[in-house]
Length: 150
Image (cartoon, rainbow, N blue to C red; front, side):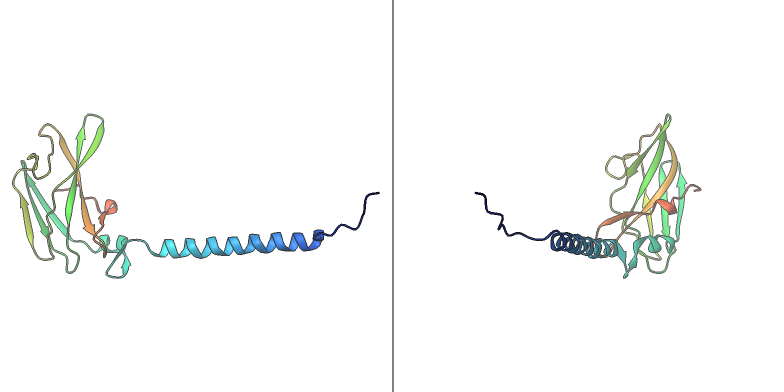
């Protein structure tokens, strides 16, 4: 004869346990996600995107020579990315580190020189994107601050 004296967890208790575990997992994921989002790139303790808006860069392109003046008051310019139109596509060329502090000027004598920027001489410069560094030294491309008139 089969004994019907089996013991187990009642369906109500099992349901409460499953819901509790699911809620705990959701809380853990929420805390992790909010912490991760807040730890974005920072410059001077605020989001780096705000620092891009504080840049005041003046450029003068004459032939293959580029003069860069950082007229800002607190954000140093690390380097630039020169966008070149080649046929139907636009290709970015990142220049070597310039590190132009506020109030300083830098010059690239020949942007086609592979040692500085490597821009092909047959391409047409369509824009220049400033690049700054965050508080941890990581590069940040200020795409919203692309300079197209120079």
